[in-house]
Image (cartoon, rainbow, N blue to C red; front, top):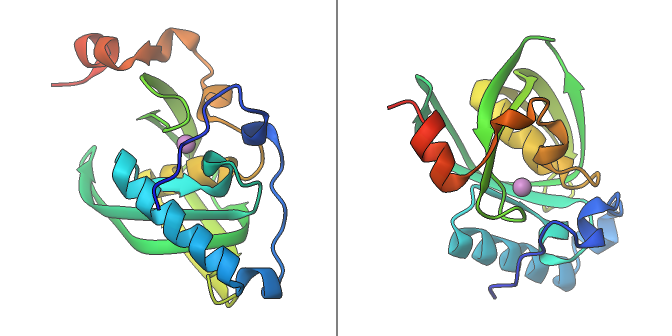
Amino acid sequence: MIREVTRMGNPVLRQVAQVMNKAETLSDETTRLILDMRDSMKHYGGIGIAAPQIGVSKQICLIELPSVNRYGQEVSLPFTVFINPIIEVLSDDKAGYWEGCLSVPGLRGWVERPQKILVRYKNEKFEDCELLAEGFLATVVQHELDHLFGKLYIDRVEDLTKLAYQEEYEQFFLTK
Ligand code: NI
């Protein structure tokens, strides 16, 4: 079921989401929640979504990144459910990308983030998993996981001259 996306200003986006235990993760309620998150992500055209973005303060987020070529990198991630994720930064090397967010519609902002991370998390079966993410994928994963800790990408835009409406971003910043 497609659910309404919470937008900036809704306090649920600013809370640290609740950690999941095994029984909660395997419950019918969580199975339905994950399906709703997936339906909503696809409906609104996102590549990731976190439970607080549909109003549920739980440590669950999804990413499904079809193969895209961004800045010369071929990047993809099959449908992945991250529960109780913990990020370890493996390299201080940062790179910037123009980020957008379903909860901050109509805007784009330039954010620099570490480009090599290891994420430890549980999947939807509550199995221990790890993902090594580099480059643009590392940025996508950090953006989504931030949602579980009350952060939005705009908090990480250091140069506010690089926060723009979508149309102005396309007009003035998008490299052709
Ligand atoms: Ni977002």
